[in-house]
Image 1: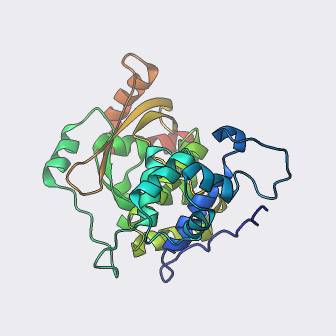
Image 2: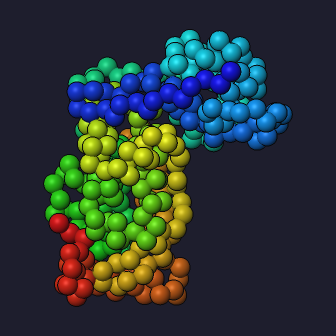
Length: 311
């Protein structure tokens, strides 16, 4: 018999940390719901299903575990689950590498000794110098919770002068979901928003006891209906390269390729760079922005007679 759908978890907040058991339960349930019997080689006899996707017994069969064992896991009890069983379930659910890693973090979380506050995020001086030396390519370093830590002059010209924002507001999730000018900047805003939420989900699995992350998710859940909807999907992915289309207030359309490089120093930081195809209109536009520097967005706002990208 089909199990009844479960209600979504209550959003976290400053005094309500992420519920790790609920996170594991919801993640497994949503991954199971996206699969159909025919997707995994099982017969579909056409019986009415009151919930979408595979049944628990079907998933347990694919993973080679008992229904009772899988049910306990989907109810959030992953304390004694082995790596082999997690791998089998990940294969049965057709999880990506990022999703498999997220499942492991949820089922077997690493608790940090200091739970009252998250450690400060520091960028090494040589990395700051590297960004300063890159004067033709927009580049920045982001950290946990999608915080924007440091950036170069070209990044400010393209995305706005983040130095004018309070440090706590220099955060991609806050910018994308709470500031209308960034909705105008990203042509494919919905995709950018989904990418940001996926990154926050990965952070939540890796560091569930981060109070600042809980506070951020709680605030965005209250203030943004789009964030609540995307957060409830439990999608996770790590997008390290691709193309972004922007509508800049000064130079108009920009098509930029981005590359993300995760630093190997254990800082959980990512160096992100953007570049245009050589000889393209976007390359010409970047050269124009380089001549304007951090004044580019203010100049664009004035010429368009509308609010720009700076506060």
